[in-house]
Amino acid sequence: MAHFAKISEDNIVLQVLAVDDKDVKNENNVETESVGQAYLETHNNWPANMWIQTSYNTFNNQHRNGGIPLRGNYAGIGHTWDQDNQIFWPVKPFASWVKLISEARWQSPIGDAPELTQEQQDQNAANTHWWFYSWNEDNQSWDLTNRLA
Image (cartoon, rainbow, N blue to C red; front, top):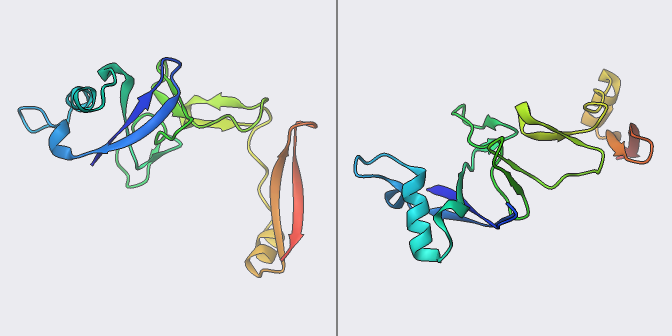
């Protein structure tokens, strides 16, 4: 199955459809985005150029099966299509976060959360604690939280 995102004029993903492989193959039996777009325009009354192919196996610009990632992330309803970078962006989690284009993901302005210590990881594994970092937008910092298991 091939997947296509239906986008609005504002580049917001409105819908994602799966299309049978036979409906996206050209005369040489090669999967081609434009063939799928034409099929979707015909059968869904939406302009071909507003159907963008997406990969169910792509997340943060990585293909989960080791293949070639397609367009940064699998499109979801409410995501934004970034034509310039050819990336589907999920909803921005916090106002201060910025696009990390190379990994097709949002990042805090100070980088990723710190790593948990080995002791914290061991406590999580033993189910005696639940350590994690959460973003504090007001303080622009990562806050360490401990919820007892």
